[in-house]
Every structure is written in structure tokens, then in C-alpha cells.
Length: 611
Ligand code: FES
Image (cartoon, rainbow, N blue to C red; front, side, top):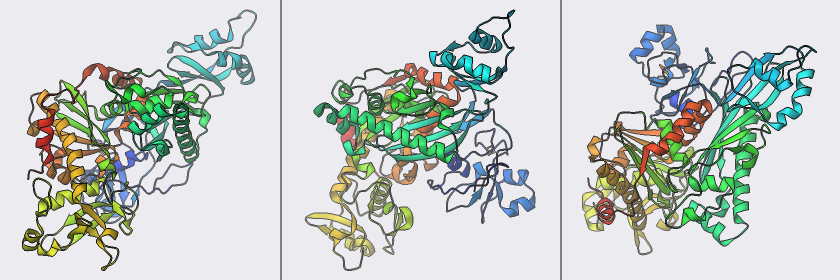
């Protein structure tokens, strides 16, 4: 329940987050603002929420709340982890923050490119014949202003109708509008994470730095191809395809903008800026730039720094002079979404050795030792999105997302999205089941199912789940009814295991080569950040066991959430952070994997499951 303050009734929202994420992060990822000045580090004692039912009490709670309040369920949101369904009451913000918490505990001092200044001007007289524009700019001493023609067309009328009491709307030093009266508190922006599969929009109140509404939908380019390569090929084969893909991107952005404005009860004309974080192909397609060179060797972008355009150029109907800022990219396969992710996780501002992995069809990997930052991209293929897997599916209702095997009792515990009958296996379920099969000993270190006789001897309780569909050996996870044949069940096949091995070997070859590039060992990595929605739902223990991430204690492996969207928010909230994103391009060295003579040997080494 979110109490939006005295003027608005409390609202109820249901959100789904990976287990173990704090209530503070869960809220922030879902656009719900909670008071804080420490950014979720347990030191400011401001993030007070009321949690229904029992939840652990920390020493910080004891210092912050009275015993009665603790009994009523009051806790600090950054110290409560969501390990079960929780009902949480979030009080309204008590202070209007000067800083906002964004990304992975990043505090951003508010300095948006969108500024408003309310002025009461002296009316012109015969003794004071300054032009309207000079009269206005003279009154605003802290900003350099240049006026758009569209403003000059309206300026005289608005000034006179509003008795010379107006608010100037300035975006990056350009005067884009003059509004009657004082509207300084009304300014918004939208951060877009323009993913190949899913697009997420967050409407931000720039006056307070708080998110107002969040919405997501499948990218409307989906019907033209599931991944970037298919979409690039489509433009190469059909002349009109680039326009269609551009229009589909525009429709997606504009539907989402409508949705967040409606939900946040915000007039779209008060949205003066948007930021778009997308990979290089998504960015090119949204702008109508030919993506062909991105799809063929030597994989070159038209530009690493897309120009700032009008929001209407990317299909958005907001303030007529609203701007769209698109994130710069490091390379054809380490795009603006990753630059945004690096911004949100502070990859360039942390002295620790940190590894950032965004698992997807194309997996982007960044490694920093506190001084040097290197990055690469690994083609992991569609296995982690449920593609090329016999019973694979996207992470939607009916997808098995967690699997626990008990070798002694034969119990198979399945976590299914939506708590419905299992229909298939999504990426995190795939990683879990393979990791569990390796753990109990039904898969050997090379990724082969052990012979039936060995399974029957060593694990009789689970052995009858090891069967065949056609010629292929499979492990049955769920049978719709006791006598339904294996082909109607949800199962993992030997070929699925191979697909997963290839995908994880591509990724682990990537990070292991980056580690050698900086002369580091796996154990030197102090934190692994798993980005993106798949990364958030992945079990760290399973990821370690199958070798998808370095062999480290699970506490060093952190789900970082939708960091691309968080980076886009930061760019809107602070021009300093926006400049930081551009500076990252100079700081990060891209390492091309396919050039490396040791690539093949490493890849083969990484295929197995060393336990
Ligand atoms: Fe500061 Fe929780 S956010 S203590």
C-alpha cells in the first residue's frame, strides 16, 4: 500500500521481485519512493515502512522505533528482505529530497537538464522598451538562455495574458516554453529501457526526483524477429522494413508514455525530456538509422554518440519541444543499455574489483579492478530466454523458475511463476535444474546424463524420472497426470543440457578472458553484479555451481535489477551523471573475443561442470 500524501488516497500495488531483494530496492525498482538519504545503506534510519506479519528485527530497528512500533510491524525498508509474499505499507515522503536514490544504492544530487524559473517581470513602458526576450532573460540570471522560434511565436501573448508572471521552461540552456503563472513544481521526464524483448518506462517527477509510475510491455518489434540479428537481417531483405521497425519502436515508446502518464495522472505536455537506454541495434532502429553494418563483420556503428533529437522524432507525443537523449554505446555489441548499467552500478567509481554480467542472447560483460575497466560481448544464444530448449518458455505464468531435487526422498520442488500448473521451463529454471542434476549426480561433469543402471543404483528415488522422449534421454520435471507419456510432460532433454553448456561456456569464456586481461584470478572478484531481469531471478548458488559466474561465495553475487532503466533515470535527474555516461566511453576498453588465439581452448575448458 502506498500512501501518496494528504491530497491523494493510498494506492495498492502488487509487484514481483526476486527473493532476497530488500523492500527498499523492490520499491525503488518498481517506481515506489521511500524516504532515504543514505541510499539504502542502513545509516539514515529514514526508510520507515510497516510490514504485515512477522519479520526479523535488526539493531537499527531497535534504535529507530519504539517497542510498540516494532510490534506493529514498523521496520527499516532497506533491512527487510523479501523472502516470502509481503504486505508493506509505505508512508508518504516526509521531505522533498534534494537527492534521489537510483541504481545500485547510488545517490544522485538533483540537477536535471530540465529547469524551470518563475519570474514576475516589470511591464514594458516607453522608458523601458527592452524586448520581451531580453526582459525575460534579464530576470533569469543563473541560466544562459537561447530561445527556440516556437517560444518566440508565443512569448508576447503569454506574457501579456499572464500579466508578465510566467515560468520559463529551460532544457539544457534552451528556452523551450513560457508558461503562464508559477508551474515550477510541474516538470516530468520519462526514462526508457528499450530492450530487444521488453521495454520499460519510468515517469519521473523532476522537482522531487521521485518515480511517479512504471510500465512495461513487449517490444512491438517482436513479430519482426526475436533478436537483434533477425531484425537486422529483416532490414537487409526488405526495403520497407527499417521504417516498419522504427514505427514499431515508436509505437511501443508512445504506448508506454501514455500508460505512465495516465497512471501518474500527469499531463504528457509536462514531460519535457526522455532518456532512452538501448543496445546499439535498438537505438539505431528507433532513430531509423540503417543497422546493417552492426550485423556483419567488422561490426561497426554509424555513431557511438547518437544525437539528441526531439521526442517526436522517436514517435512520442509529449511537450512539443521535449527532447530525447539516447545513450552512447561502446561498440556494436556493448551498447547504450550497458553504458547506462555501468552508470547505475558506479562501475567507474568503485575501488573494488567488480564483474558486471548482463545475461541475454548477447551477453555483455564488464570487469573493473578499480582502475582499469574492460568489456566484451559473448554470443550466448537464446537458451537463457527459453529459446532452443525443448520445453523452454519465457519467464511468464506457468514457467518453472526454481527447481530443488532431493536425491534421498525423490522429491522435486518446483517454483512456478503465477503458482499455476507448470507449462515449461524458463532460463532461471533451466540453470536451476541443471545445477541440481549436477549436484545430486544425475548429470556428470561433462554434462551427460549418467547411465540408467548407475542412476538406479545411486539415486533410486529419482531414477524413474530419467527416461526417453523418442531417442533422447530426458529428465521429467512435471507430468500433467500420473499416466501421461513423457512427451506430454515438462522435461529437460540431453540436448537442452548441451544448449545450456554452450551458452554458459560463451559467457564464462568472456569473463575468464577479461580476468586474464587484467591479470586477475576468479577469487579476486569482490562482487558480481547480475544485470537485467534474468540476472535478477537467477539463483546465485546455481550460477556458481554450473560455472556461469566465477567460483565465489554466493554473498558476493548480487542481483542488480533493471540497471539500464536506472541509468536512464540518473541521466534525467542529473546532467553531471549524464556527462559521466559519455565519459565512460573513454574509460572502458573493449576486448574482441573472436580475435583471441586462446578463445577456442578456453571455450572447451568452460563447457564442463567442475564440481
Ligand atoms: Fe537509509 Fe534505510 S535507506 S536506513
